[in-house]
Image 1: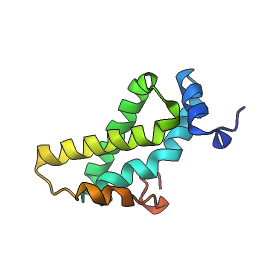
Image 2: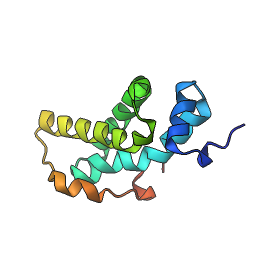
Image 3: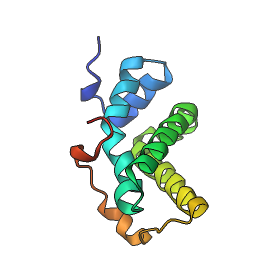
Length: 116
């Protein structure tokens, strides 16, 4: 069994594209905190709203991973998807948004993860 923790993102993407469940689990583990923290901390959304966005982002990643042109840019692609879904949610629900320049200060504290 492969130890996907040692894989760089591009290798992980390749394994996910081949349907390797362990690779997908590692991708989820690796990016869960980031995906959850954007709507929660940068858009000031409620935890349950952040969880909805979190789920939606992972659905999109799963469905669209084959469209990622440069696997080395996985993190940027995930941030883009997450930020876009967070903005759409806030507009739809007329919630307050944090300025985009604050986006660079994304926290990845494990205590904020929905997996904990």
